[in-house]
Image (cartoon, rainbow over all chains, first blue to last red):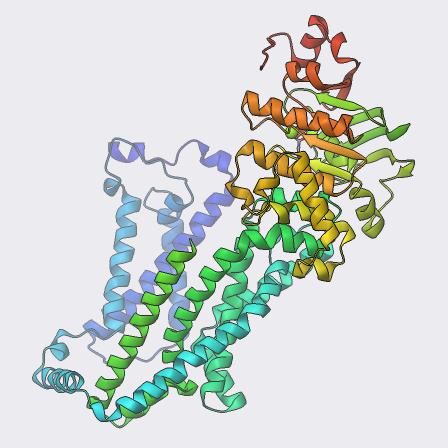
Length: 355
Length: 254
Ligand SMILES: Nc1ncnc2c1ncn2[C@@H]1O[C@H](COP(=O)(O)OP(=O)(O)O)[C@@H](O)[C@H]1O
Ligand SMILES: [Mg+2]
């Protein structure tokens, strides 16, 4: 009891007001409900009752929530609360290890619980990993991969060239679009008036949305739209590149020095001239560097996109994998590794020279 | 002849800082007017209001009998091109040659599409080289501007301002980033274009010794208000303490 005294919610708790306390309570409710639900589904149904595929009912999380509310409310009178620790309502004494405080121990417990649940959900099984049939399978695929079928070398090479070109076209087409959009997405240029700031917000939002959808998903969308093949892959990479380059370019514009811009404005130059002479010379080198890096990324992505029918070497890989022709897959893996390594090396070299 | 007139000029920044309070003054053609004052007294703000880099909050501003505060767009740009400006940090275009930097002073009279392609007339190029000769840098025309020393960069900035063929040159602490001897060299070029080319100069300065050497008239700002107007020789001990505070000690640079 004596020890707990030092962990009393400190004086400022009242100054912090009820907002922090309410926030802490909500965090606690979520954590305890989560614990109750995992404990019931995993601990009781799966391990105690040994049921392999327990049914799910929507009343279960609701009961868990009820338990969470009760537990969080009861414990809100103690220092045994992760929510309070996060909200800054618990004072951690300097002279004592933080692992001796109840809230930190509780946090460790929650993390351990999640880890155990995670192992279960990902079906981690040492037995399967080291079983006889498992090891035989591993031996089969590795020996096939290590004896690649050089007969398809030519096909692999052409498919790889298709992939590199696809990435190149996607990057090239994205550059001018991103170049223009970046000026509208740069806060320092757009905060002048309410109208321009509204345009800035809309463009930022659209770009963030586009970027948060993986190119793989865009490739699936476009493969329905324009049919399976390099064109759909190219469109997917193009769209994603526009969004990424716009973000990188506009961040670069935001970090330029105002001096040349001010000087050009003072000469009586037109706004377009101000940008061309005051902004562009400050951003060309970083732009080039980003763009080459982007092409490098696009080559890797183009390979993955090929797996869902975006054309190039990825599509070839998917076909041979579907036929379980592992020697051919081995050949393709070697070509892909070589291309990725080469692009990585070249892009790093070029970017180093641009510094 | 009266070139510039400021009536009841006030400036409040969007964040609520009032940098200028009710400033009144006039500038005659050919003057070398120096503005002094502590850091934060509003000197830079005042210069930027004159060429409308910052819009004024209230008051009138007449340049060659034309109201500047009422102007926008093309009209404002045309008037701005008649007012040159140089800065403490020089503000040259990085990675470009000295000549390109000087030619940028002609942007206002060059069509946009031509300037995007860098197409300047032979006459303009010749003029740029002539102005470089005036500041003693004709041999550096094809050197990258960011490879020059601070004093040389400021002289390129002066040539760029001259390229605008200005009536007035605004100089915002032009020597504050330079060492003493370079400072004098740059000030001498400003004096030269004032006396030989007849360009009116309005210059913010920090050091009183430079003020005494170069100014034909002085305005002192304190807290955004004019506290002194007069000849540089008339600033005595008393005025000095009013402008810079009781504890200030005068230092000179030679
Ligand atoms: N862009 C700005 N936004 C808000 N306040 C500013 C801005 N520029 C200057 N100020 C403020 O205005 C006052 C005058 O600044 P300034 O004109 O730069 O003085 P000086 O050039 O004499 O040092 C200072 O208090 C400064 O903090
Ligand atoms: Mg200043």
